[in-house]
Image (cartoon, rainbow, N blue to C red; front, side, top):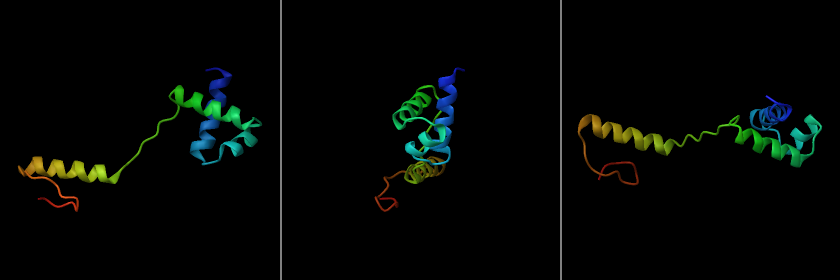
Length: 84
């Protein structure tokens, strides 16, 4: 791991981990904001950052599908969440 990787890790931890702005990260690390932006991108490119989105609508749809399969139900879901 080189110095750029270490800086990128520091930047992504401060940016994503503590919620600081890029400007605040720059101040903490003694760097310019554009440099922090590049370090954050470097961290993403190196796989140091992963972002997961948990959409409850997808979970509900998945649960409904599992229930239909488990109980042999058929039908289509209405927009209100019930069966048609």
